Image (cartoon, rainbow, N blue to C red):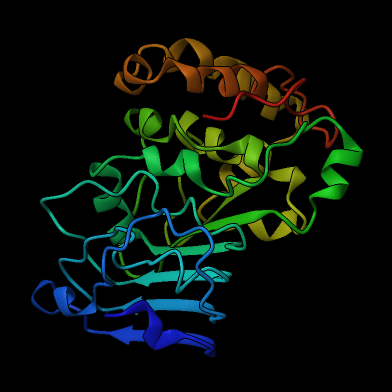
Length: 274
């Protein structure tokens, strides 16, 4: 597909259903590289939804940074990704206006198997002092929601899954919304994903059947659970740490204060962005 087919377009939602590997090649945009910083198609697609697909390769050949420059929401529902390729690490980096990503849970487990470095590049334009109220207030409209939703299958987040979320960018105001019919155990993995939930603009919406085992704890019990999880020590044993120890700086600052109150939960300084 030529990017110029979308010049001067204004679309509320681009919806594609039943996209399979055999047809994906026909949906790919031309590879024009990323050195066209002055390219402006004047195209506005606010939402992009792919539903009931299979064998999809998630790369910027599908999520073109010029066509979807102004995308605010991306939905991937009941779709399985390509088995042969890892997720493009910089897949979401170009989309500074992206504020909501929805993944089907069955698909999300597939995605975790294909690497999670893409998480560190979510909401890249944001990098905040999370214990600094003026900084938080200045970025209240820049929060990103990563919705992991499932209404059909049983789902778990086990202790063994913790390393898969080594790159989760709390300091970039990315929040996990987990929706499932399954009540999850309050594992350290779930605690890590929800550790700063009270900073979310609509924090009560993060309390779901899946997460209330952690989020309904008292502040004292919540903080004790965080302490007992020994995140910094456990993350150093992850393969992901051996490959990218720089991310540990953001983890260290995230854990600088474990108090569950709004202003003291996390970080004394923003981590270095890589």
